Figure 1 (cartoon, rainbow, N blue to C red):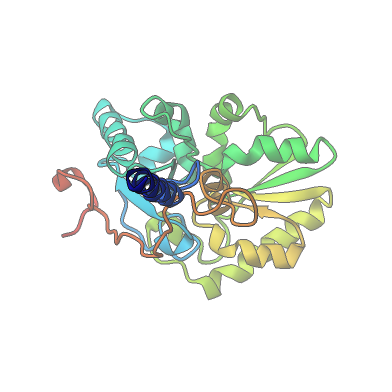
Figure 2: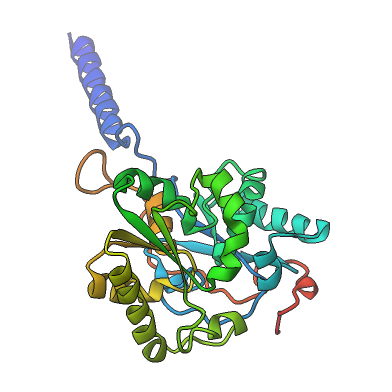
Length: 301
């Protein structure tokens, strides 16, 4: 009898330990090794001063962001849509660095003219690639139909024009149709700093951007949404929203949308299934994460 009781006691202890271990296991789907989603940004070989709201500023995001410049890919070359074989290889290296070494969830860029290379970027990664906020146009068109127009704000509408066929192919959107209005900001006082790489003076530029937005909406009262194509325009998005009462979409909204597909929604469903973000961004300056910095045309030690 004592042996039987001892056996039963031992089994009970064993069962209790097993139950305790089972309770210690994370629920299905929870894995403390799953990293928080992060954004990878392919950057131009260009030294400029990004403001909060610019894709080039890590302060624009509520999740981790990593940067990698493409040696030789200057603003002028990106605007032209033509890369040399060497720059093309550097572009591939940048995509693969962000994908494989940083393990980012989504890849974007710090210039709307990277839309030229949307298809090229997809060749080097299976991660979602959204090189420009122009990729949002199909959703905007679907939501508004043919009754509402979308105003597309660019740093320079003349320079944006040649990208028409690429956007039509990649996004299925023909902005020459009557439901789109192209708006260039090249004549806004102070906005020429974008092309020269100088810091934007918010106090100087904001009134001009807002004035232009109100003017365009007055001329086209059937505009129902605004898309900021240039990655240096999001710092003005809130002012335009307030002034026009219209929804304004930009590169930050685009990045947020794609990242949201990878992160926990705390309001319902399974919670805490990936690591929390500590709020600390990786510091970055042009040349970081590039092995051969001598290839960078605008690198300053």
